[in-house]
Amino acid sequence: MSKLLHRTLNTSILGGAARYGARSYFSLPAGAPPTSPLKNSPRAWSPTPYVTETIGGGWHTYDIFSRLLKERIVCLNGAVDEDTSASIVAQLLFLEADNPEKAISLYINSPGGSVTAGLAIYDTMAYVRCPITTICIGQAASMGSLLLCGGSPGNRFCLPHSSVMIHQPSGGYSGQASDIAIHAKEILRVRNKLNKIYQRHLTKPHSLEEIEKLMERDYFMDAREALEFGIVDRILDKREAEGEEKKD
Image (cartoon, rainbow, N blue to C red; front, side, top):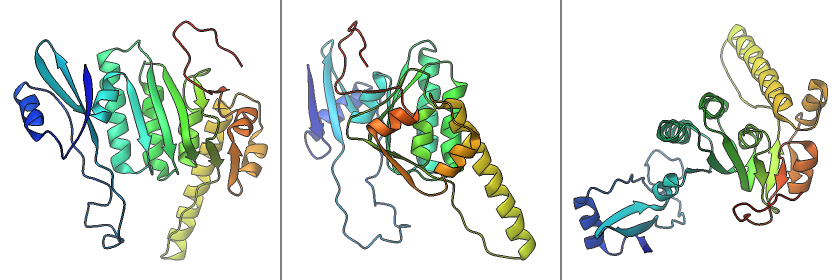
């Protein structure tokens, strides 16, 4: 039997779970670090749900994301930054060590973020031996869209009301003219690299010139347009039962 709990409830049960050796990781709520420039502005916060299971007469308690990890489900929620990248990479490597043949599901709801942090996740997805299923929920924008289309061929999905956005990388640099020229050359190199990654994974053929033109500005797509463009393989209306025949 399983039961959803919140951090503020049943602290005695959580303590008992610790005595039984249950493994879980804890993270601070969004907005907690004092380094945020908006640290004094009010923010909504939802407590992390916990799942407590009784197995063999003992208690096992997990935060919801650790419990999903047991089912080989990894969630990318929010901006792609160094901390998020480190967490996703660690989870992918752990699941590969656990079972290198079993698929991993990566759920994406992200506005994008750091190119280098996102490419660390992308490279790890290609590096591990496990097939990677990617599912867009909400939005997959910028680097999120690249991770979405970087899943295993035939296993890239989006839900009916999700949104996908692609665009060229952006950045800024100030300093001496020679240094600005160096950074300008680098961002053009990164743009060309990202365009080639999209071209490699899109299910529909596109030339680099076509991709570069579409990514010149923010290019938003709904689920159907993302399917026609070739970022995803299918649109999922609902989860299929095991053994159910796939339908387009």
